[in-house]
Length: 197
Image (cartoon, rainbow, N blue to C red; front, side, top):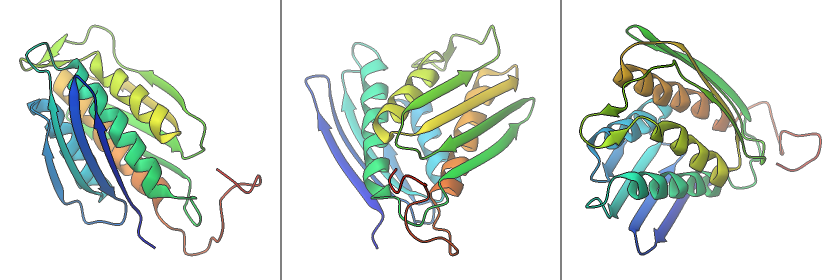
């Protein structure tokens, strides 16, 4: 069974290609034109053991918003495609990842129902580098959740450095998604009493 999703999304603002293989080795080939976002997508692939290709060209002469948002939408859609009918998956996953003074806790249900709960420490620096608005982290997660149709809870109880706070979230998200999407050798069929996810 090939668990690979491939999505191309083209608008007047962006052109995005995303391919994700759930049963990979963490091979990453990412280029969005937004350095810090590329770094976060690399965390997602590496720590989730997903083979991840992302190629985005966007209207960066305006700002990074459309580029980041449309990439996250395509990523969610590709992830959903790769899951197929979700037969044999574990469905639920959770992970806590520290990064120096910061801690991120992530729990996911590949439920077919999009829902996001997200909290970060108050008073985060507004920017990481010249391009990444830290309010985009929640928007990335909203876009991912909407297209992947998953329930996602992300909580950062403490942290000071904005880079650490955001990166810990992506690492924990990667580990939680890896656990939830893995095939369970003891399970058969869709992991729901409804018979569908």
